[in-house]
Structures are given as structure tokens and as C-alpha cells.
Length: 47
Image 1: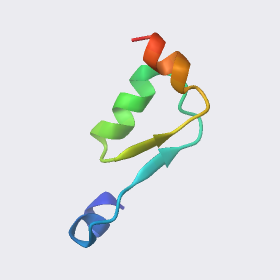
Image 2: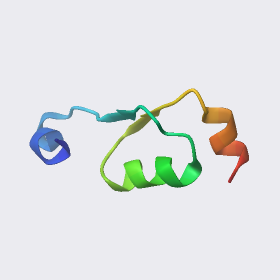
Image 3: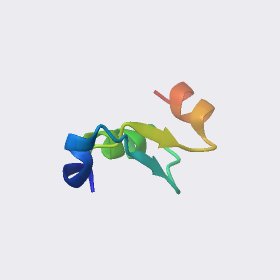
Image 4: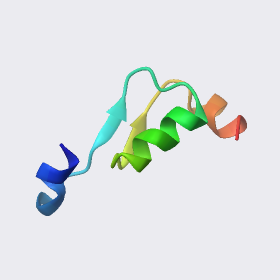
């Protein structure tokens, strides 16, 4: 999806089941620009 949208200036948001810093980092590495999670405090504190 990221490759298909890269030239259109569209941001990619990863969401659903992201509960750890490692999972969030993996999504960013895969091309996500934003992370949607209800575990944001835990992710930031856990790192």
C-alpha cells in the first residue's frame, strides 16, 4: 500500500493490535507514518 501511495503525498496509519514499542517500530519500518493505538502511554513508557 505504501508504495502505491508514496507519490500521492498520502500518509499511512497503522492501527489494530499494536500494543508494544516493538510492534509500533515494526509498523514504522514497514512504511507507516502514524500509529493508532489505545496503548500509547504504555508504548512510550516501555521504551
